Amino acid sequence: MIRTIAVIGAGTMGHSMAGCFALHGFPVNLYDVDAQALDRAKEQIREELQVMAEEDFIAASAIPEALARIAFFTDLAEAVGDRDYVIEAAPEKMELKQNLLKTLDELCRPDTILASNTSSLSLDGMAALLGPARKSRFMVCHWYNPGHLMPLVELSFFGNMPEGIFVQVQTLYAAIKKQTAKILKDVPGLVANRIQQGVAREVFSLIQQGIAEPVDIDKALKFGPAFRYATTGQLEVADFGGLDIWCVVGDNLLEVMDNSQEANPMLRQKVKEGKLGIKTGEGFFPYPEDEIQEIKNKFVKKLIHQLKASEYYV
Image (cartoon, rainbow, N blue to C red; front, side):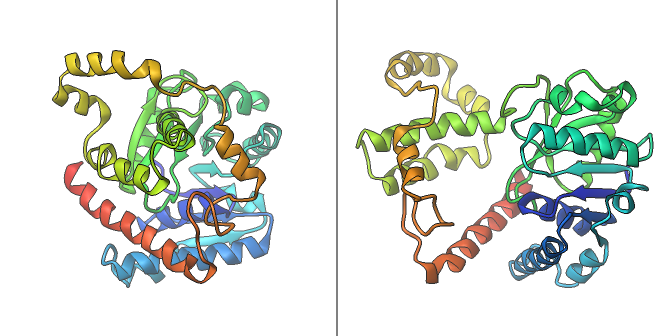
């Protein structure tokens, strides 16, 4: 049984993982090479838990209890030496992850389960420097951002590990109220990101063709397909609509929809212009500097409300 956790990397995903595990009662060691990153992470975790308490999703008393379960380290050996489960959230660079995992293999107990939060790198590639024993205890556990709110974690089951180890990890995530998807083949993007890119490709194409304004395209998605997707999967939607209907509509629409194999030129142009979204003040929509924090808070609160509702449908 997995009882103790270490998270490697205190950035966007790492700090939220640590906070999530701690909130649900697990002692967590959070490691980063940068002491200032750890200080920021502690404050970010506190702020995120505070918003959850303000929205009555957790009790205010849970905040100091969760924070007390997190220890912060700049020494990797101290952070991982006694842990049952270690997940890395380092940048998506193959050589970096290979070397990090090799080091973790040397520092961790033989029975420690190693995991990567990667969404794009292959399991075999990352495990290239690991021996057979550790490879059988290594998997991808891909969280969705923001990790403390999004319920999904994709778990790899690619044939390298016994099912008993997979079940241990699956049980761990059930204990922190995550919904896990068992992924059977090592493909780029796993499942959720591939689905998301399919939707995004058509959305960007619709804008590029001038078929509707961005605000109306987002409205069509939010109050059309995505309204159902919050509670009902695509295959369920197809079954309810009738597979014969879906077959006919597919024949009629797919040949005229975007099937490009690279990022949309309009998207690439926005990147070239430095219009990257909320972090630069403009993307498809403007984000006035004095409103950005309010916009972010509204986004988080919507996710919390949706998370509350989703528990009814599990």
